[in-house]
Amino acid sequence: MISPELISAIRSQYRLSWNGLHGCGHWARVLENGLRLAAETGANPQVVELFAVFHDACRINDDWDPNHGGRGADLAVAFRGKYFELGDTDFIALKYACRLHTDGMTTGDITALTCWDADRLDLGRVGMMPYKDLLCTAAAKRPQLFEWANNRAFNRVIPEFAMKNWTHMVMTAS
Image (cartoon, rainbow, N blue to C red; front, side):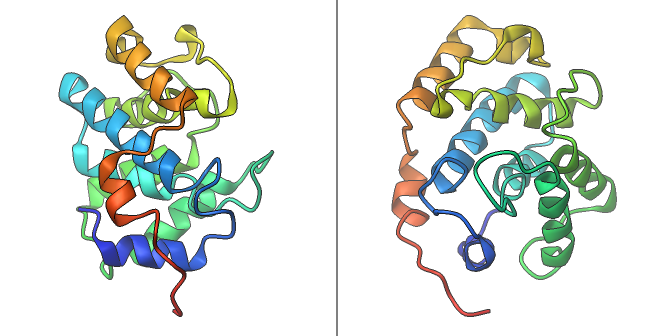
């Protein structure tokens, strides 16, 4: 689902440090968190994968940026059909998950909940422990998964696939 062309296109418009707090390492951990969660929750893994790379793709800073999820959803709209394909129902779910990922919601569609938990489980990268009460799924609250994700976040582990394919990418002309 996530092609090198999609990552390159996202990279070409990304404003922050590619290897920073909200960059490719974070996206890769969110992707891995999300796929582990989806295996237990039944969430749509294609939406989870795309959420991982779009949810913070249009941030303008690493601090308070209240509309970055909406801009990420808009980028997904612009890239749909060019860099990835997704059915209408699943695409609506992707946009919803991106737009609302910072709103603190804990109820809703299982795919959105899985996406939000995948992101929240990576809060350790900024020195914050996720509050289990603000996690949406039983899978994310499960001690083994919670500890696995939290340790990777605190240590800013970059998954192997991202180290191999994403971290070295340079900006390309559009």
